[in-house]
Amino acid sequence: MDRMRRLRMNGILRDMVRENHVRVDELIYPVFVAEGENICRPVESMPGICQYSLDRLPEELDRTVDAGVRAVLLFGIPAHKDETGSAAYDGNGIIPQAVRMIRERYEDLLVMADVCLCEYTSHGHCGLVREGEILNDETLPLLAAAAVAYARAGADVIAPSDMMDGRVAAIRTALDREGFIHTPILSYAAKFASGYYGPFRDAAQSAPGFGDRRTYQMDPANGREALREVEQDLAEGADMIIAKPALAYLDVMREIVNHYNVPVVAYNVSGEYAMVKAAAANGWIDERRIVMENLLGFKRAGARMIITYHALEAAAWLQEERR
Image 1 (cartoon, rainbow, N blue to C red):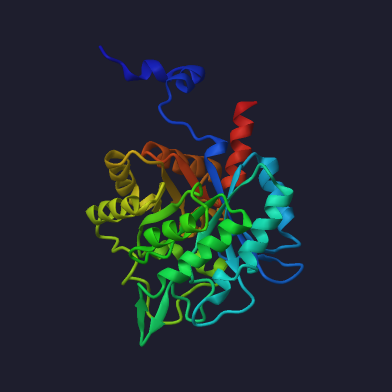
Image 2: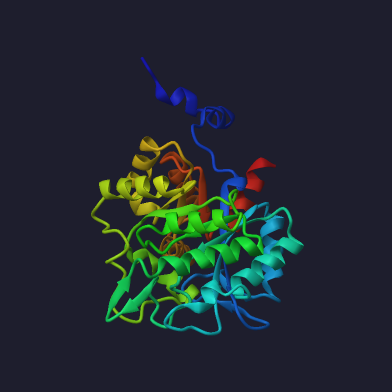
């Protein structure tokens, strides 16, 4: 008789035959950087997550490095917003300032810079707006300018999340033209118009002032369309692909992995984080067990890396398991 449990009866043996593992050096920690001074502003809908001003940012980065997490994804919160999101592509804006500071103080930390206009526009949309329409082509030069500003400041990876058609090509062309031919693009290619982003909009102060983002982010009902988005972004020069959100779209992630031989990154988004935190705070779940099970699920679906707000906690738990 074939007894599958034979390989489950001993903890060491279970570890040895385990198909997937979560490693600390695969975790990417999102960090929110705000203009101003002495800011450590908790995000109410995301317990444990704060906005940091530049002078307080080292507190969080020190914790990140001490945890063994080697990569951060930066989101900027400017003091000034306007219709064109000009602070997003200001060479002395909050993200270039943060990148330069990190480069000076944390030489072993990989810096990924999110590229989008939503945190910087007065209307909260990811592109320029005219008469209620989010303009695609007119937005591309601004995204490219932001990417160049971040690369010039020292960002290791450029991560466009705006979902404008053709933005990867525009960014790749601009980076190459300015001499940043070795700067990779991590594209949010499979980004769905999801209800899971609510807490992030609190953290990044980026809720749309009118309407929603369904005209440019993907319909949650469409899985095959995600493959078209990925194929287009790869053809335009993307080096890595994000699947976002992660939990409700594991099937999409697996399809991308099956079709394309490129690194796929799972984004364990704010709503997924907030739900776990809320359930754990009420004593309904074992937080550590659920978080690690979720992260393993992303790896099982084929993710090479995971962007997660749980990164520092997960890193600590993984270190404990190794002792």
